[in-house]
Image (cartoon, rainbow, N blue to C red; front, side, top):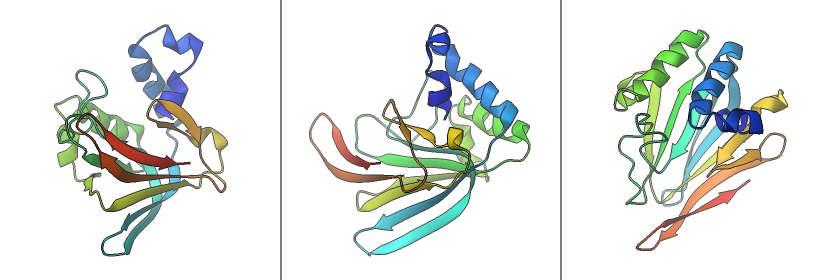
Length: 173
């Protein structure tokens, strides 16, 4: 929802500062993102399913979203690894802000006990189902595009393969 909130003609004029502005607007509302997360391992044919309220959820193939914002320190654009970064709903928006500020401290948030940081193996499929009744919370960013989830719509990400220059992921929404 951060990208969706920052993706308007009024916000784009602020450049990359729009993301910080959008984050502040979202934190004022302090929404909880209720959803179902399923990680299916194709090799062992097992599912790890969690259903919870999130304050933050991202799958990242790159380490940084901004020069100083290190969201996934172990990610690299040079390999095909995908990492899940998430944390449960924080009732105090200051707690959310503290965790997000740790990402500006060279990615130290991944050491925070409230943060889940998991490498997604090539045999795993990640499926996110948004269960929010507030449709403004159903917008997520998929590789720069805004996708609306909710109802029967869900996001499924799986590894398809790679070439020398890129990784191919399959997104189903």
